[in-house]
Picture (cartoon, rainbow, N blue to C red):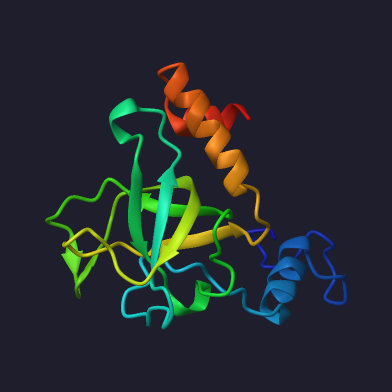
Length: 163
């Protein structure tokens, strides 16, 4: 559009709309996408097995262990052992709101198992999202990767990344 006369580049009143106007109109008509919640603040937890044990994809040896996360009810069906998930990692104890830990950066991980309760006594952060409901990590592959990581003094996350 020209800033001088307020008329599109076509120059005529009956000219086809500009490309930007077409894009705006198609966005208005499109179904509103379901946004992925940042923290699942206030969301209900899964009724059955509300805790997910997750292996975070950090290759640092001192983080070569599992971390517990809360499972929101909306992710209950997709959050099954063996699927890839995204979790918030790195929030300190001071970042707790409404009984749930918040903050930290999004990183990938593998959901190892679902549990009725956590060994961790503090507040749990919620799973951010299930990347794909396809199970990519079988118990056999996890056992083999753990054996390789132990044998060659590597982290389980690194071995799984290379597998």
